[in-house]
Image (cartoon, rainbow, N blue to C red; front, side):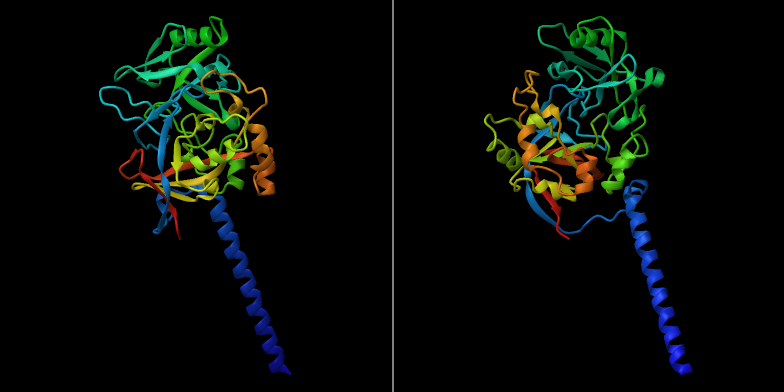
Length: 356
C-alpha cells in the first residue's frame, strides 16, 4: 500500500511539474510574440526556403503624403520607404513630406482632397519643386539642421517629428489648398535629423497586440502605418470584375504591384523576398473613403465605390481584428523592410515568399 501511495505521489508530482513546465513554456512563447516590436531585427530568424509567387509590375512613390505619385522603373529600398535613384538631384522618398495645420495636425486626402493635385519633383541636390494646376510652382530648399523641428499629431493618435520647411511653403500650400494666406505648413522627414516613429505611441501599441509582427522598424516616415504596401494585380482585376467602372491600382496607393500571384494571396504573405532584400508582412491594409476619390481629379465617386463593393466580400476573417479595424475591408498588405541586401529593385524582378 505504501509503495502504491509513493507511486501515486511521484506520478502526481511529475504531472504537476509537466503542467507547470508547459504553462511556463506557453507563457514565454506568448510573451515573446507580444514583445516582437521590442526585439532587434537581427535576432529574428529569417526563412531559408522560398517559392516564387510573381514579379514586380509597378513601383510607386508618393513623396508628399496624400499627393501625386511617381512611377519608377527602378528604385532603392530604405527602412522608411521606397526611394527613387537619382544622380545630381535629391532622391525623393515615399511619403517623406507632410502638410500640417497651424495647430500641428497632419493633413491627408480625407481632410483635404485637393492635396491629390500637388506634384513633387527634385530640382537639385538641395531643393524640391511643388506644383499645382494653373498655379506658380514652389521651390523649397530642404532644412539642414534641427532648428525648425516640430511635433505634429499624426495617424493612430501618434505624435511625430517633422522639419518645418518655412513661411513661403506655408503660404503656398495655404493658398492652394485652403484659398487663404495662412492655415497650413509643410514638413519633411530627413533621416539624420528626424526621429523615427515608435510602436509605443498612440494606438499603434494596441495594434501590436493583434498584429504581433508589427515592429517600429517597419513603420514608414509619414505613411499611415507601414513603410511598404504590397498589392496584387489579380486582386485588382477581381475587384474590377465586380465594379461598373474599373479603377486603377493608384486608388489604393501601393508601393509594389505584383504580377502573377493569385487574387488576394498577398493577405497571407509572411516573409517576402525581392532580390536579396527581405520584408515582413505584418498587417492587413484596411480601406477607407480615400479609395473612392479619383487620384487624378480629386473627385469623389458618387456611388462610394469601390468601398461599397469591398465591404460586401473583403472583410477581415478574424472577429477580434475585424472589430479593431471597425469592419473596414482589406485590399493589400502592409510590410516592412526586415533585412536590406543590395537595396535595389526593378520592374520585372521576381518576388518570393517563405516556403517553410
